[in-house]
Image 1 (cartoon, rainbow, N blue to C red):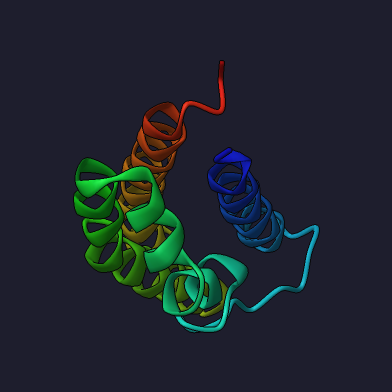
Image 2: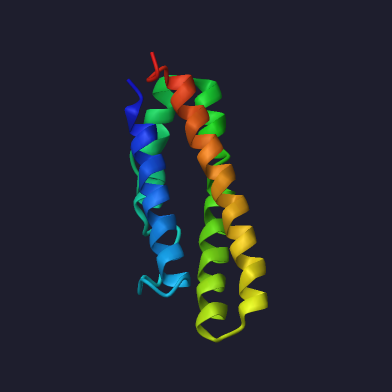
Length: 120
């Protein structure tokens, strides 16, 4: 049980890689809103029930995803906007925030996976 948390982690990392490709000039992905990516859609649909099935601690970890997930999308959108406008130093600040928030999301998704026992 629980491999769905690793699938959501993979969804997030794929999204991040698409943003990174655009920032490096090798892609043209412009991002989505936090509710429109695969992770966001899961968070709005099956996510709460899947976390609840694991238990209260997983529900608390799941609930802690919402704010940094939204902030990640805001930072990545701002980074793209600034980079495309040629404002490299300002874009770097947003890219740093984007990576910090991504690391937080990864940690929490891995915690959900650990709690679910899928690594057994």
